[in-house]
Amino acid sequence: MTLGDQITRVRDLARTTSTDYSDAKVFDLLNEGMSEFAKGVGGIVSEDYLTVSPTFDTRSTFGIHFATDSASATITLTDLSDASGASVASALQTQLASATTSFSSVTVSWSTTAWAFTFTLASATSMKITAPSRFDLADATALLVNSTTSSGSSSLTGGFPQGCTTDIALPDDFVSVESLEWDIYPVFPAPYDLFTRPQYSGNRPVMYYVRGTKLRVSPFPTLQKVFHIMYKHTAAEYATVTTTSAACPLPAGYHPAACFYAASMVAEGNFESTQANRLFARFQEQVQRYKVIQGNQSTSTRPRRTGALMDLTLKVGDIS
Image (tube, rainbow, N blue to C red; front, side):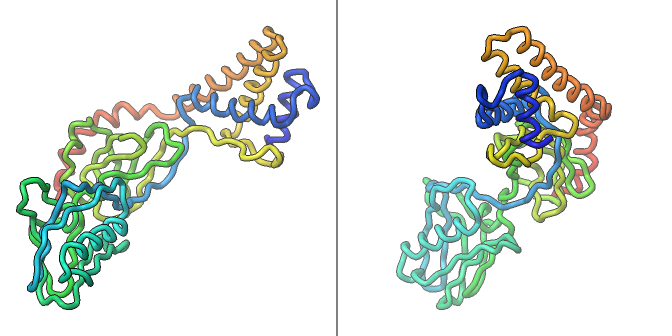
């Protein structure tokens, strides 16, 4: 059904006209109905592909010691959350340049293909990054260059930053995970306490848990592969009332659900309680039918979750 079809259907069901209920009013009720449908079924099942994108959390209590053949300085990092590599590189370059005049021409860059930081100073003949000696600074060498000591000449490229791909952004409309696969392998849910200190990198993630709007995985991946997710999501909405040709965002076969809900709200507003209850009951029938059909699609959920610990044991060789 299109938006125009649904608006007409709502008025027919509620026995009202455009004079009593404008398109804009019905439009709002239809969007509300689609949202309530998604809530009622616990989320609409869909699929997507997740992107591994390195992000960083840095604090002013983190630091590194940067030294060349002519100068050295302890650098404190900047307070950043979920920052891109480019943002961290820019902040580092600013901190280095302000530390000493010898580092005024240093450049720090982030490679979006190699996932590594590169420090460059043309006048240097040797370069080294080590842990800070100050007691008030946490060592950030693993976070930036994945090593307690990294050396170079006029240019130094670090290793893969530890843990920068631990958190994966979920779709904006995400509600819950149905299944998750990395390449051809399933990824299993695991308890929170297994992720308190993510420190292992690997060929593939083996386990996950949902942390707010992100997916935390372990081992954290060092490359992008096909990362497929089946998940439940909130309902999309019609964007504008004037586009009456827009197709209903609900799954095919459940378009009338929004009509029943909207019409029941109209009938309730007109003090037609019996009609409102009947229409809302038809809305609930649509919700229940969707839940039953989806619930009967597969009986493998529980056995698959039970096998998670076995998978973790057998695949420990994937952890490096």
